[in-house]
Length: 258
Image (tube, rainbow, N blue to C red):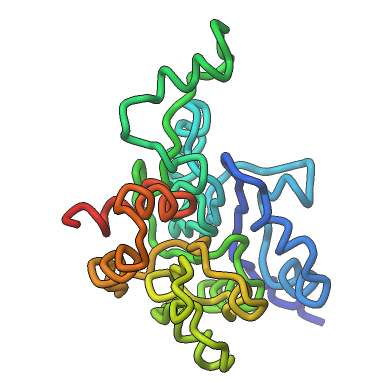
């Protein structure tokens, strides 16, 4: 009897830089899907699931977290060289995250010294920045953390040779579908119209304003939204500070002309 033909599975790597590791935990905690994932792909590196990584060539690499040290930068560039496709997953990888909210303001060295004092670092600290500040990114999966359904849909399409389906809708769109009262009518600071959707408007569903944790929606009308928030009595400086909490470094691209 002839030997059955060996099925070659796509080689996958899942990595974390500076962040809370929440996106990796989403994968680990998805009990209904994780066995299917491990049966469908050859996971070469995923330190939260296996302590024996194999750092070779990859078909797809998923990276969460911002680049915040020189060691992480070297690691990211190595991943990029070995991966045919690189996917940034989660707010920190896409936007830099909360750790990048002051990136570029000229105070980095002062802030590092205030926190750590005069110490010799094992690896040089860098201002927090998104993954695509240093390497080319092929696809993005937003979230804080990522939504499991959206992430697994992206994985399924990639391992079958298709592109992940973009999700262009803002949180505001989901909020309307959920029939929530618009919090902006009560003059509350809500970033739903300019924030990438996919969270099913989780915060507004409970009466809490959107704080922008999924990062900026590329189609968001930031100029009009800033003017609306300013009409509530908020200063431009305060709006920028608050929108950078999660918009990090990336948000500057969208508000540079405001």
